[in-house]
Length: 114
Length: 113
Image (cartoon, rainbow over all chains, first blue to last red; front, side, top):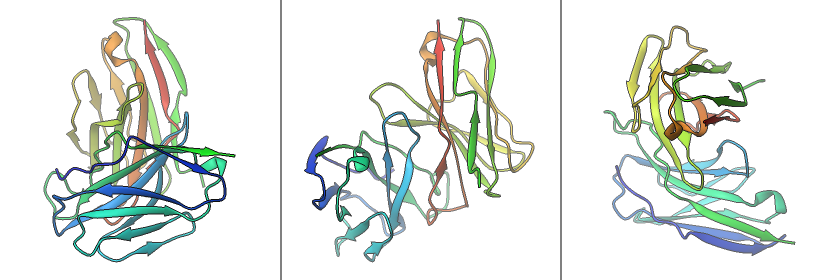
């Protein structure tokens, strides 16, 4: 499975934008980039996903590099409720045993200061 | 809209006991998954199912069994509980394929003593 690399931790101030980076240099052409977050004592929550183009939804934006070897999750205005572990995950869209599966790494712990 | 419902939320088992963790989803998702999460770690896939009657092993299946008799339900069975199975267990569901997000349940915190 293609792997991702994320910083162990990041910090932000409330109401400021947050850019969470993810490197995935071995990504294949059929891999989707997914982001999930896990708030303390809760199950993971879907945030956003994309294949090649940048994506926006009500929670966040996903910026994907032109060569697809990296991506950035953007939280436009961080709130205290955004403090969580953020996981960047590649999922295979090519069929086979890895089709659609999520393999979680360690993620990035985001701390938001008031 | 309930989403993915897991029961129980907490359980303490003695070594050698057995139990079933229940998972139900009401979104008509074909795919369902069981993960475990040890303290400070990411989630690891135990078993998954692509539809009723079809299950397959994930990364850490030893000590667990699953069945999928309906689209809605995907119970996880622990036989002969061991301390190494102390963990938080998450069930998830999704539509088929990589272009859909997963919906996770709120988890079952299991302690084996």
